[in-house]
Image 1 (cartoon, one colour):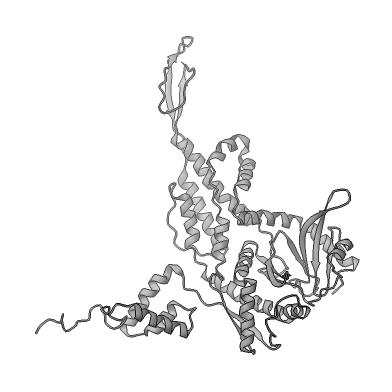
Image 2 (tube, one colour):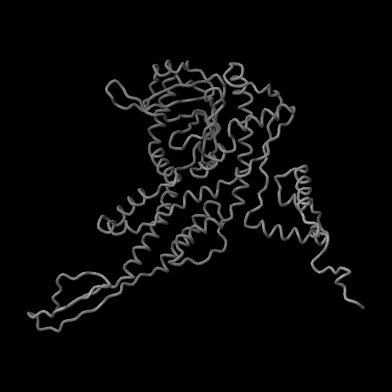
Length: 477
């Protein structure tokens, strides 16, 4: 691969920074929605859509329901239970080193964050670094990095990672955008034009060499054609459309509730508008026409709005791999909670299975990099604690255990209880199916604990069916 110090390479990187301005801006907006803040973007959307006059009336009846955060959380459940990580072709001490490293890195928590950003943007990155005297991993937000491939054969291979840092001031007090650029062999600091910031590199004691020999990042991507997934304009639009429609519903109901009162050939002065006001009308003496007063009740088809919301949310969720199945009806009373419930009840098991397969493979890539390139280098330099030597031939195998859907757990327990009572399965096998994360020793301990806590007069699980007859209850012949 061409050197980062080559002008032609830095020109390519500068061009990529320029061409991804829109991506970075859009990613920042989507990240804001993912973080839970929707009101500012929703108000801006309504102002652009309806104009300032209507906006001034609608803004007090906004329905800032943020489905995007809820959708991302629903899709990102694979690390709710830690995967099994076992060392193969290694020793017991290798397993101890692995388990302690997982603890030091707070790895499951960090990977859950990575999984959330993957589901938010379609791609994510994990930086391998050191924080003081401890190893450190961090998922870089998607509005703070871009990736590039310089491989003419495989455009999905990440060769260069560009991280957006805080700007610095030049001698004139103007901001200069700063970028950290890494490849397998080199590290440089540049501005948006691609010029190397030598002073910064000297101050940070960086000589341009990447001592690890590998890119200090692990990248996830659901796009099979490029290093980054396409910009998710559609998710921003849908995230804003649903609360916009709910706000339309609130706005329409306002005028459906209150009738319009009109007068013809009347003198109307100083009238107090309100249901508890008494109005004194006078006919217009200058008019020869009969005075009239009446009301107009606006018509608002709330059912069509609700049906539009229901259908669009259903299609949106389905496009994300979330199967909505049978959905109850939405009403004006339950519109917001009903939409939220659609997300809660969506089936994401197939999506979780696909993600688990990908994350197991990428995690194994991470551990291979960490124990081959990073951990031994830092230990040799005395930069981090030496937990022991990790065997050269040892490999970390990662496996996500199948999850029992929470909505079906009660049914699973009931079905297994019937199988135990019928003698089709043992109590131990039933408990193993209910608790797939437990090993055999933990299952035996749980059974013993259950037996010890059980009152003596309670019949053991599976000893007797509901219709069994004891000697005391057996009818006499």
